[in-house]
Image 1 (tube, rainbow, N blue to C red):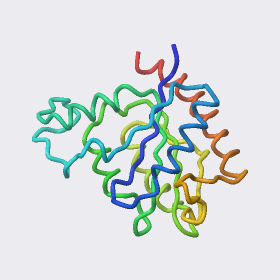
Image 2: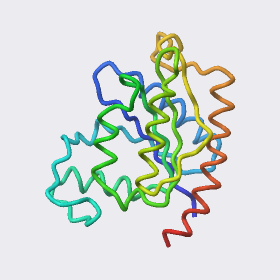
Image 3: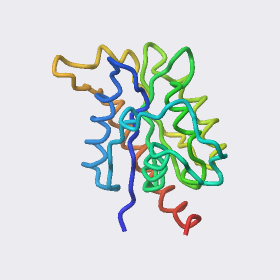
Length: 188
């Protein structure tokens, strides 16, 4: 059975560049062939600030947007969060989406492709890794950090990676596959 990888575009703001970076990573994951890779746009779920009346651990979701999000999260064996850095931290849209569900995240590996200015989103990625562990997820050491991302988007809105991005992404996908296979046994 093929493992399912969800590549999640975490920024939901107008004018975002996350979709360009995520599209590149998705194409690379498909080419590498270790996962059935799906591109997931968090903006498409239109999640309001957390509005469920019961704790997510109970999985008694009242709202259709939560049920749809829970089904998407549950369907994956591994995740890659394509994330910007907002004021040295993760985007609120990602933290909100993480908090909507709980058990659906458990015992799955997660990678981070961060982007931003000179830091490449590294401060955001560090905080995200800490948060992911509270969902019983295994954040990968391997990661992709894209510095000065706007300088790597061409006139056709395509992300133009350098060799470091490509090799980092390949290492991340290899580790994700190992962890996804191992952690799947904990969920069955």
